[in-house]
Length: 241
Image (cartoon, rainbow, N blue to C red; front, side, top):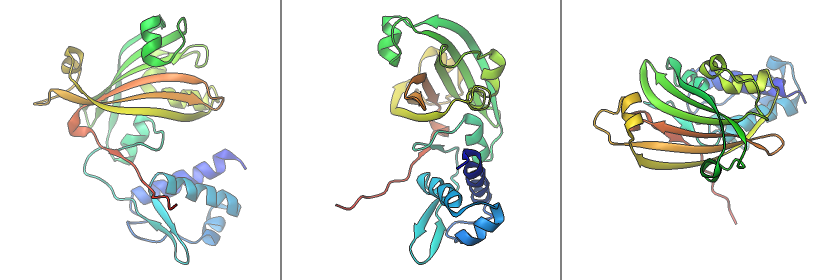
């Protein structure tokens, strides 16, 4: 099954749900209608629908169909269970996004960096700091490290646009899985200089290690979020014994 086919269907349905063409609590068209609309197989449609269910947009109900359970939130929401680029998150939340690269350099992982990130000591890394803005307001400071041997050729221009887009469309590498940890930390001087913290003296910090389709870690990222714009969404399913 061509990956692009079911992903294009998934993205189209996702956009229609977000724009409320398929509103909250409505039932999506049946599989037979989607097969005709997208000119594809039943398995392709089912894979796209399964992806929507996995991110909490829909719920399949026996004898009824696929019900929309997505509701827009009042602030920028980020997903826990999926992997989105900053641009994709902004588009889903209907916000204008910009990225400013404030540091781009190359480093070699020493013992301290290796212990902190999970990269092996001696790994050649891109070290990037990016300021993320939503509707013109600086709300996230991203500190990224990428393994240069796995993700070669990153430039300042690519970092400003989308590194994940470069990885998937230029390097043709699968971004498979991300392990994440969320904490609350006191703001540093760098945070105070870069972000609009207002009365806040702390930030929500999401630390992630991201792996490709071969199970190799290619990225370590620490995203430092202004609390006012921090909202992570997840969908939990209770498993019966």
